Length: 392
Image (tube, helix red, strand yellow):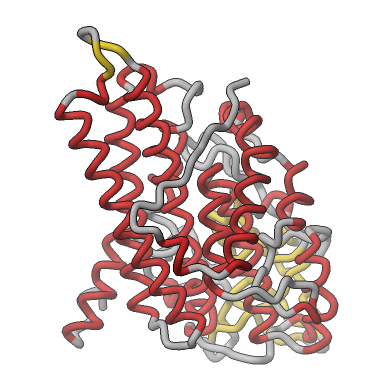
């Protein structure tokens, strides 16, 4: 088993912009990833299996709802701390970061923001500790980029609602204890419902044969006349803006997480280039390899600055959805390009499980699509700057 020798690039001394608490939070997550994720992740990715034993550790480093108030079991941290934790986890694996992102931003966030006090007390402490795991049901087989077209629906029936429909490509679905599901009522208004494991008619079949996010559990959510107690509806907000606000939080985490994947690819390529001898010298001494490495570091540095500034704006309550979309799109695109270049630096060795690069590259093919595709985020920026919606 190869030791994890990762050293994070910080070419513009961005650590100077972080508080001591930020650095403590990040370093704790980094140490945990080196100790608990790096040694096992290649094996689990090869087996297409999520390492369930890391859930407790994710909770201990504050990866589940780090910005949720301590009253409800969270760590009460700021947005930059959340971003840094996601960065370090995705440096280990995008699938593991997906698990934490979903738990934090797509399950705990809507319960905290839009749930009743009873719902908060019932679910948030157990989600923060990892005793409960959650998932988020928005995407459907026929409605991805256009979630407003969803057909999953619920109807009132005495003291219950009856829920029918299906959701697809749902991270954490196979083992989730609670699903935050978005469905339309009889008037066509979108609401959030808390669907709990064990409710009759609720099933979560696992998605197999993935080439990407292989160490993450993905599945479907099937609702066949599921009886949902009326107290399980999120009372604080309805309409499509409710799930989209959750996606803002998750996309913010992705903008940071993708930097982690890029840093790992860059660090691997740099280390390999210094050690690999061809024509009697290390390949790091050649112009083309230096061009690759210098451009990688430049793009990582630009993404780090964007993520940091976005974190400041989000903590101040000033970050717009369009700004978050820009960062998600840019940083994931940056990461996938770096993964591809880093793979070339390693030559044939780059496709083996001895190194992390090919796994990152395959994972990022999902990250560039989920929670808003690369193209849709571009059009969100276009809409914001022109006032014309090209996707409607």
